[in-house]
Length: 229
Image (cartoon, rainbow, N blue to C red; front, side, top):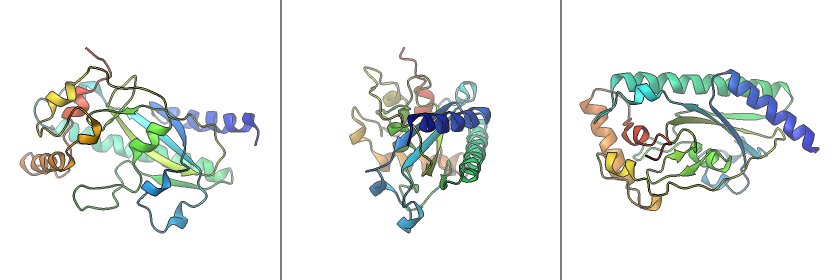
């Protein structure tokens, strides 16, 4: 497989993603990552070697509406961004299939288990990380060097030959804004110590108390702007 073809396929897909409103695009080699997938049967993703990650930078002004709890404005924005991500995902899948390859869309808020804490078929953060779009921060959000944690992601698994971006180094340095912003006290010094149960319980409180009907918060997302000041 020539490098020119890999680059050509990559450039065309990135062009489609950007034209459909996406802020970020990257490709990961998913060999060794499949054990983390929650997809059955495994034949559904068998032979799909690449993970395409697309991301949308959330509105900074909408996030500023969040003071100490999620707002209706953020809820509506969250839903519309998910819809936009899903639409872009389907357009990329359509193009890939038209070229004679297979593609499996993993939509923005796809859930494989509703048992707390909820899990998705594929971790968008994991694919985005290995596609070079950022690192896992203390809040276990994916932190992009430009947009911080203020990004929503979707994923496509495919066998279309593509140039791979690969994981890139990065860390949060001395920034601890998310720790002080978290109302549940779930965020610790190390991502490995993140208290997932405390986070989910807080999400459930917001869902009921604020009449949101959805498990969202946004406080750590707002805190992580990508600007360390």
